[in-house]
Length: 200
Image (tube, rainbow, N blue to C red):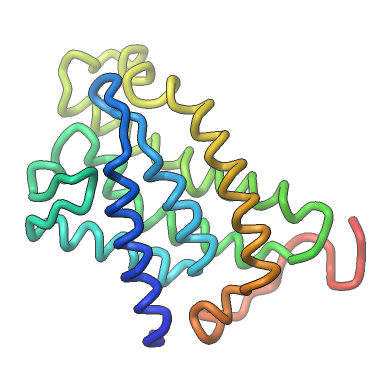
């Protein structure tokens, strides 16, 4: 673990805490931009520092600091949205891992980023999120109601967030690569996509 990477993890945790205050309540699960920050954190900091960022957020929230939507404490972390919250470190790790395998400066780079960010940084969270929601909110225990309360209405907005996040990551990767952010790559992996010097 590098000091610079730890600093950026702390900074992204603070950024998340601020942006998580922006929400639109529409039921048990509010509309937020938290998943946009998850996508960006994993993609820009890589798997380990990305996951660490949300371990920091969850750990401090357990201690009572209001870092998630202005709320803190164990009640939030076992409440209706707990399934989503506990998936955040895993989402950031997956996003960082697969983004690190995408070759820069190719025609397919943006679309590969979009696929990874939307699936790994967002869609996967709905599995534990909806399952836990059904468990703690009896009114939405039928699958149809659970999906309507905790997944389906959010998907179009999440796709837009993935489009925005992919554009941001594309720009940052080209002017400020991940190794410059964390002072060295965390692991060596073979990228997928076209090899250097080729066009797909």
